[in-house]
Length: 257
Image (cartoon, rainbow, N blue to C red; front, side, top):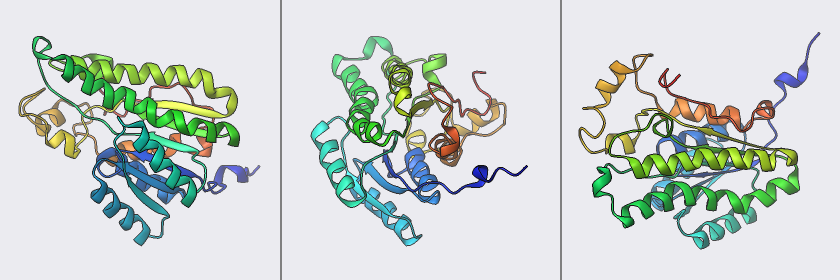
């Protein structure tokens, strides 16, 4: 017996991706655009975000860019106004904006701590909260947060980063329970080492000597790529993933399993 629903095309929806100008965020945007969604790339690097949105438009996608600081709620709200005017209500969000830092616990200042929490945890919440009403009204929504495998394993000299990403996992779990009755799924992806600009710019020797050394230690014998995570985002944001919520989906090459 054929089930045509399994091959039915995706409904075109409006997707916001924070940190969408590069790395994991950009790959998520590319996957969502390939599914026919209208995508908005939010990033502090406004010019780069516009460059990537233009590339998506050249490929036939509906895409726009906005310079957004996720620690500034007014910045988020202004960008969302533009998205709604251009594309309509938001029903998908991927929160990839984030920063990292390497400091021994004895050297983390109050300002260092506050900065990591503000971007990685509060910024995630501030990006999600204003689009939830759109999803509730539609009776459908997909939220994917990007956390970190370090929040599962711990990591030296990263107490503030680990705490912020652990908070993202907790926030994801809480939202999944609260929003599931409204047809909204909320999941998190904690990647292990992914070959992104942020990883390339990490302080030398911060965790292990280099990405090649990490690849040799990974069960699948390579580091991850943004596309590995972007593909998982694409699935979790799809119609087919409607029974998956509150989950921590490790994209980690076999680490921490």
